[in-house]
Structures are given as C-alpha cells and as structure tokens.
Length: 173
Image 1: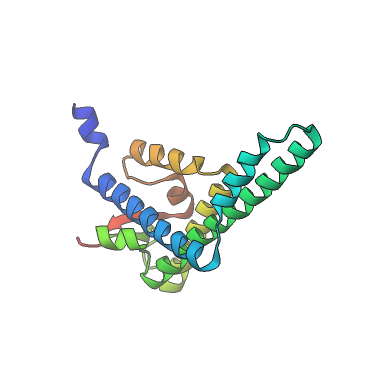
Image 2: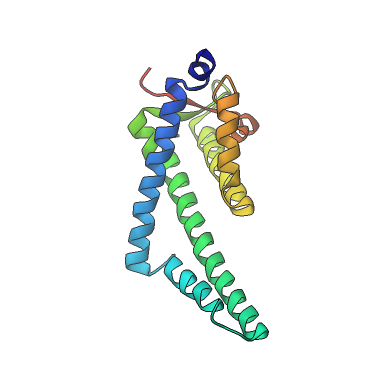
C-alpha cells in the first residue's frame, strides 16, 4: 500500500487531471472544427473502411483501402495540428500553462534559473513541438510511455521535460 501512495501523489494526480482537461478541451475544439470546417472527418474514414469489406475484386479493394488510409492520415494529421496549435498558443499566452494546467494550478517552468521570458517561451514551444512530432511518428504511444516515465521519476518529469530542461510545478505555491 505504501508503494502505491509513493507513486500516486497529489502532483501526479493534478498533472493527470490537467492532461484530461486539455484532452476534453481539444475534443471541443475538434468538434467545432468538424461543425465549421467539416474536418477532421473520421466519419468519412469509417465509411471508406466499411466499404472495403464489400468489394470482391482485390485491386479495387486495395485501391479503396489506400483511399481510406489517405483519409485517415489527413484526419489524424489535422487533429494533431489542432492539438499542437492549441498547446503552443496557450503555453505562450498563459506563460507555460495550457487550459488544463491553468485550471489545476500547474505550469511549465525552465530548470535553468534566470532564463529570460523569451528564451523560456521558446523552450516551452520546443517542448510542445517535440511532443507533437513524437505523437505523429508513433501515433499516441509516447503519451503512454511519458506517463509511465512520470510515475517512475521521483521529480514527476517526463523524458521530454528532462531533455529540454523543463518541469511542471504548482503555480499556487
């Protein structure tokens, strides 16, 4: 029981809550994009994939599958671009905070003392870009790995935090 208490701390729960709030906010933004721009259209992807099973000819089935994968790639990359845009814009506007971090009283800070605001903002932007590139390359798997890393690291820092010299701290203390 003590081992679980050592892993499940208030700071880690706040960071998880901030992440979930950010994902909820992203879902709302993507729903608005779907209503206004009709993108990302995962419904069209689903319809294209459903039609693959009904095609008997191998060549036609392969062409339909390629079209479905192109549609999925377009929808996925659009979703990641919207997420990355939200992440970067809010980190810059709220000085190291996303909507979820702001609500939970967390913010990203540089581990280098005396670093200027512009340089720190650039570091936050690069942090978001690294997360975005890994998300595109490995389709969400790095998020799972980063959470295991946060749970295993005594300082609650993910790999990209260590690499870029950032940490998530409480802004209310």
